[in-house]
Image (tube, rainbow, N blue to C red; front, side, top):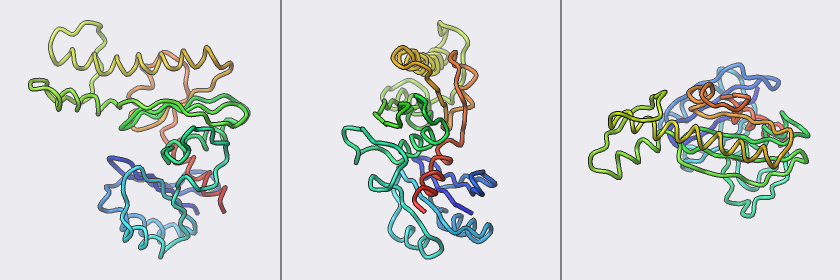
Length: 240
């Protein structure tokens, strides 16, 4: 059994893989990482694990986990199944490394655009030769709502809500339209531009907001909320 752990900015997701298939997954807070990881190791008799972290794990947490399992900490030096053509490869986020790995493995010999809609929205392009070139990073949905509230005196902090109108007739509806339609328009525009330059483009949508966005985007995509976890398992297996 393989254990994969994705330490995000707001939460931690873990999954147990058996022969490439997820048999168990869970989400928990940063403060409970050691307890939850050790519980999974014991319950499923895991032998190998990988951690991808865009947040901060202290040395004590890493040491406690390493005592229980063969652990790979994903970083710029980890062996990966694609060619990294990023101009600054050491700065490439581990989450994006995992997504690119999943794209190359699951869609071989294809041009792939991976869109991860989470705290940030990331766009990552891998061509059919398995070359990763980069993409883009923009604020995610929740970040956009929070920024409107934080950087103004009078705009309220709202939870995401889709308004099927073009003109907001109140401050609340105007915020919803600006944020959500702005995100949707941005994603659709990126997809259109990538399609113009790359024939037979495969598009994968993943991340925490995948279910919210999936049915609202006009472009045909493959929605997979576990794409990053699957990428981590691919990297783990690739390094064993």
